[in-house]
Amino acid sequence: MKMSFEKVSFPLKAPFVITGYTFNTTDTVRVTLEADGVKGHGEGVGVYYLNDTADVMMEQLAEIAARVEAGLSYDSIQSMLPPGGARNALDCAFWDLEAKRTNTSVWEHLNMTPKSLKTVCTIGIGSAETMADAARGFAKYPNLKIKLDADNPVGKLEAIRAERPDATLIIDVNQGWTFDELKEYAPACAKLDIAMIEQPLKRGADDELIGFTSPVPLGADESCLDAHEYEQAASRYDVINIKLDKCGGLTAGLLLANLALRDGKALMVGNMTGSSLSMAPAYVIGQFCHFVDIDGPLLLAGDVENNLFYGAGGVVEVPNRALWG
Image (cartoon, rainbow, N blue to C red; front, side, top):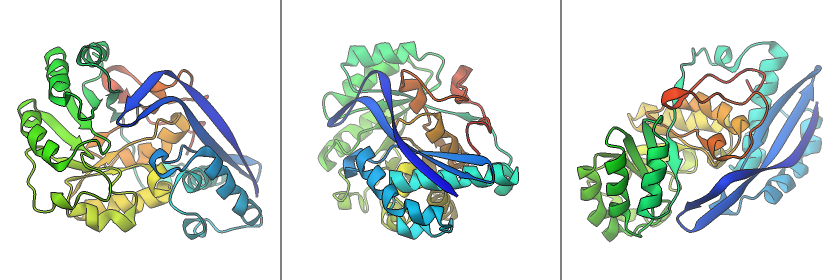
């Protein structure tokens, strides 16, 4: 086994604004595993709000590279690396390598028949006019994800809904509201037929949701990183957002999905604005999800080779095996 890893940066088409952050590039770490004449690849973006940066991922991978090359078992990395981008990249590279070594697709390995998915297209925070213009420009996408903070959220949603009465809208607050603001804005969201409010409150400060009945389903993103946080999140949220960079790879993502499906929770698959190499393993999780957010490559100025195909209606075709899996 040979292991290599490198930083790969992808400039964005335009600055992408969410609560408290503006992104101009996506800085990833790509892991390559080589054995028996074939190579497996995985990509980690990390978790920005946990300081899980490309530099941190590189350091974590360097610490275990020799053991991986010496024959570290696939299962061992689940405990040797913490949840995050480094383990995600390595875990997904193992999945890809095994598929190529055995000439068996990930779908065959999981005994699944993949279906095409329909992703949201994401609109970053801006003025009401700017966001409404973006919604109009995304006319071919029936599902939109709207980034919001506490600055005129209802007015922005009204402007977007006026432009896109046809669209399914979900909103992502990225921890940007207080509980009082949630109670104020949620009824208006219901009137505007918002399908879901994602992460309205700060991670670790959402006890107030216990016993609260929202008129719009609430989704946990930052409040549910991995399976260890599932039970607490399930007591407060209706939807669990699985991101492979949060939980640490496809293996951990499948574990979290199984817990949520067991309890009848709705699922969402999300992304940290990676390339198609990040979206391909997330596509597996998307098979179980009511909400699908794998539009990261659409925000990039350039993508990887053998990239995902995004068609009419927001339909994303099954990944080419030359890309991953």
